[in-house]
Image 1 (tube, rainbow, N blue to C red):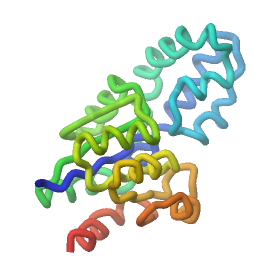
Image 2: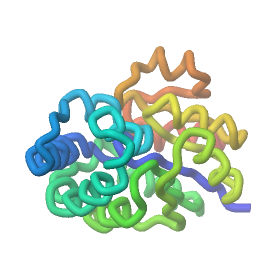
Image 3: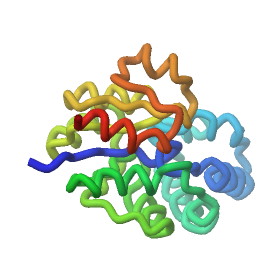
Length: 201
């Protein structure tokens, strides 16, 4: 069977922080509710409802989540940047005949807009998944490796018995990712092609 490698999106393939910060700021202004957008973008990874739940009462969450996703299209998608080595990492998987998955906590339609925006084609895109939920999807698609920046990504890889590759481009240091159970930790995705080559032997 072909090698199958999964990637997280936010802070693994893309730096989405500037646009997400702008989206939170606009949502805050519209709703009149304070949101510390700097704090929010420092802890990307968990579900959106969890972050918005820090700022809004439960009875408002459905409405503000829907509005955030609408604002996201205009304010966050155009402002995101490819992280160093992202496209090359995907190309390295393709070069050995592998399949590429993107499994993210982001709402899938907006994740698709991001991928289209940088011209990144993947075999499978799945959104609204987190930690062990990512693990279930990885297992279902036969993933051999999962690459992510968050401790929740390491948990997802471990739950799927996939090789857990941490990248220290998000909120956690290399030491923290290793302590959480990452099998290997890379500074960023520029190191991924060489690692993959060595991993495949």
